[in-house]
Length: 191
Image (spheres, rainbow, N blue to C red):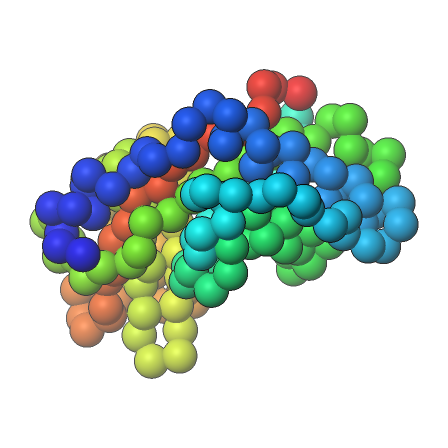
């Protein structure tokens, strides 16, 4: 994938596919919290059955409640969304597990990612690109919507992605590897 196609790659899901993925995510969380199992999916076809990478973000009262995702397309998109939804609700180390009582107040947002490609700092467009910073074993990722939501400029976005990786904020200037991606981002109505 060229850097130019990085910009052009998203979106590719239609409204029905988006709705289906949001339903899959919600049912997976509900089922896991109530029965400790994830429901089977029948009839997933087309783009939902193709290998994909995605993040599922949970918010409660407009505040982050969990976010987990895959950067590599290693499983069908519907399964990635299921697994990430359950993990965001139960395994995000920044938060205690979601309780069944919280389900009605949770909002689900899904970010379907394009493949990661090398990108130079000056090529990054705030609000369009997500970033992965890697140096040695340390790596951190911020989704494209994060800098816009936080009101960051480009330098702050680059710095904060390094901080997310556990690196000094200036690591992007000193040998860290940058990869960019775009994402198709959609979610449930505000709860």
